[in-house]
Structures are given as C-alpha cells and as structure tokens.
Length: 293
Ligand code: UTP
Image 1 (cartoon, rainbow, N blue to C red):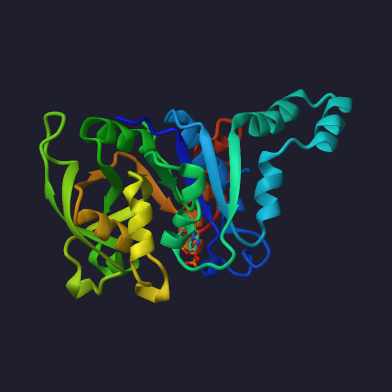
Image 2 (image 1 turned 120 degrees about the vertical axis):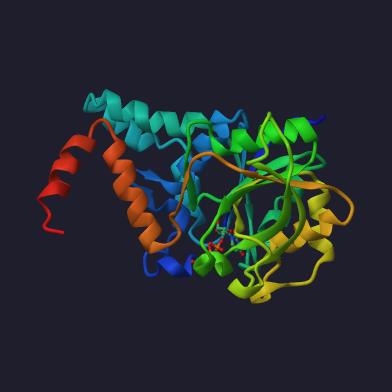
C-alpha cells in the first residue's frame, strides 16, 4: 500500500462569511491567538507524519507564501535585539515544511481546488486539510484517518454528528457502521453522500468535516463531474463518483472541531485556545470573570 506523503491545503475560497477581514487576505491567515489558521493545519499534518505540503492559493497568496518563507530582515532584527524566543518561533515556521504552491485562478469550488493539485500529487494517495476546520484532538485528526486508510487501503473522510438545524451547511453521508478496533461506534462504510441537503432530506446527522485521505482516482472523478451545489465543482460530488467503483470509509474522529471560517466559530476557538495557553490562560480566565455576562 502506498504511504500518504502529501497534504493538500485548499486556501483559495472567497471567505465571504468573514468579510471584510477576508477582502484582501485569505481566511487561512486569520490568527487564532497568535498563529494563522493554516499553521494549525500544517502542524497537524506534520504531527500525523505527512511532511510534504501543497497549498492551493487564490487571492492574497503572498501572505501565505511569506508566512512559510524565511524572513531575513525579521530574523536579523530579532537577532540584534537578542529576542531568542521569538527568533526560534519565527524560524520554526520556515524550517517546518517542504511546501509547494499551485494557483486556483477562480474560486470554482473545493473539488476544483483539489483538482488543481493533481500534477503535484501525482498517482499516489494524499490528504486534504481544510484549515478553517480547526480540530483540537489528543491524536491529530488526520492521524486518526490515516490509521483507517492504512488498514483498509481506501479513501477516508472525517465525520461529525451535527444537529438537524445546521445539517444543510455540510456534505452529509448515508453510511453503515463497521466493526473496527473492537467497537462499532466510529467507523462507517459510506453508501452515498449529498452536498448541503435540506434538513428534511438529509440521509443522516453525520456531516463530512475538512479532513480527507484520498486515493488518486478522485482526480478523474473530479474531471468527470458537472458543477453541483452553488454552481461549484464539489469534492462531495467527486467522492460520490469514486463510490461507484471503490469503497469509501467515514471515521467519526475523536476531538473538538471549530468552524473557524465562521465568525462565531472563530470566536469560540479563540477563547478556548487562549484559555488553554500556558502563557495567557490564567490571566485571560481572570479577565473573563470580571465581565458582567
Ligand atoms: P468554504 O466552503 O468555507 O468556502 O471552503 P469559502 O469560499 O472559503 O468561504 P465562505 O463560505 O464564502 O465564507 C472550504 C475550503 O475550500 C477552499 C477554502 O479556501 C476553504 O479552505 N476553497 C473553496 C478553495 O480553495 N477554492 C474554492 O473555489 C472554494
């Protein structure tokens, strides 16, 4: 079985839910406490053993490229000011990854963005991480999916139970539980999936969240399909096409997911991540207690 070495980060969406902050910069650069969202995703990939990072960029691509690049002026300045800790933090980012970029000129959908990475990925399995889905987990979410991939040698998507009133914002699966690791409560074999169904038509309460391990057949499927929901080439539709000939699994991951591409989700993530920080948490907690809410 081929090892997953590459992770694709689609970062070319318009981020309309976060305007005006996303007018001139991608939402993937919004900072959660002090790190841009995309860095959390990249760290998750590294901690999962995937070191080759492919970022699909759109507008504002320079901010992302600069972030992962060496900044000689900044490093020099920090060196002369003897700011060792900050220097180490800044260097850790540029030392972290082997990164390539590909451009999606028009935001024609998540499936289209993934297809743009075809040449760089080649004929091998790969991961997809949507960095606006921030997942706080003991075992990184991508690692959880890779463990399933390595067992079944098939594509795996991350699943989460979502309340009925918000299900129509997601790709939703029709799936049957599969016994795995001595339990039947996390792994599913997917029968069908539908992008953004009406609540009354959703096949289940299991939504697809932004982590995928995909086999390379997805590329020809994405080429074969027509635009779907919202007039975009949807990754969910591509996966549905793959399902005709190959199994796809879904894994209800362990961990807490924040929709950081949405203002309220972003605020929740900011508060919870700040409270967990050793250098900020205590003072921030004290401050929150003083608010009359
Ligand atoms: P979203 O569904 O969150 O869309 O994309 P969006 O356009 O970024 O944001 P809103 O809904 O308008 O606020 C999910 C992921 O897919 C990427 C986004 O960057 C995000 O990581 N994406 C989406 C692309 O790279 N290209 C696209 O054409 C669409």
